Amino acid sequence: MIDSAAAVAEFPVIGRDARYAHAPQVSGLCRQLRLAGAESLLADEAPTRKYVLVGETDHGDRLWRGLWELRTDPFVHTAFADRVLPQCPLLSAERGRAIVSPIGLQAPADSAWVCMGIDLARFVHPGGELDEQALQACVVTCVDAGEALHDRLAWPTADVQHDAWLNRRLAIVLSGFGDLLRISGMAPADHGSLRYLNRVLLRLRMSAQSQSRAIAMRSEPLPAIGLSDPSHGLPHGSIREDWRRRWREAVRATLVRHRNLLVISPWSLFPTDARADYEYAELLPLLRHADACAFRRNMSIRHWNFNQFKHFHQRARAILKQRVAMPQIAEHV
Image 1 (spheres, one colour):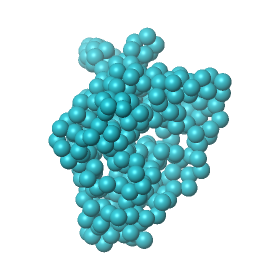
Image 2: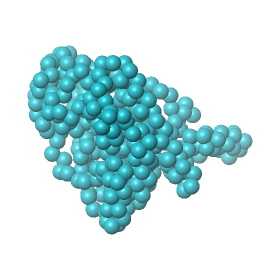
Image 3: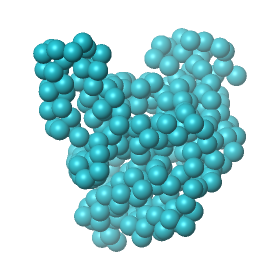
């Protein structure tokens, strides 16, 4: 087992109460997701798995070897995305201090997420061509259904209910990257493969953001944005009015209805075989597109040697840290 150290900590795993305030409407929305090619990830499960945080500071190979030896335990997973990013640059990044089951989503404590899954490989034609139009339509359906589900879920505590109102978080979990490449006959080590998947993800992000913005324009903006207005703390006068005007202009330019949208698991980069082919670790840069990461692993890494295991985690952490380096307006006002 691993020693207690500043770089490693066990996460609390949060289960969800699977009762709904409007069960018939929820069933209809889940059916709508299935018809579009997505799936609902609302089902509850007992939090039987443990997640271990891999921190930013390494404490030598002894610590890494302890984690590597745990790779064969199906109920212990590593997690290493300690920042959750917002869609709106007016909001700041948040610390992920808990895990939300059943997908192993690293997220802020007491946060409320509507989780939906899209397997990109389902949208590949027999000839290997990706149906991007249907895929983008599926993402739009996820945003619409997720918005409606937020108001129909019976959240388990008052704190989680408040977060649902304040942040309206969606976790559109994208998977099947490795399967998509394999079906299309593309090699993961080819730079063209990475460029191709980057373009696909950029289009999906644009589709999700556009739909979130459209919902905000016809209903109301995300409440968290309004509460973040820095003019609230200023005394009455011209300075406060100037700040308020500037803030409203920024809100109009970056308007969204949901704080978070896209989730990617590092394990979704591999084909869904029983054994993770390490060659697909070349796709790790795709994690830059994720607002948050999910860490439940359904494949074996028993065959990975110590250096592969350590390098995979170190590289993934470095890529995820690059996301946080992107400036957020909220951190500078």
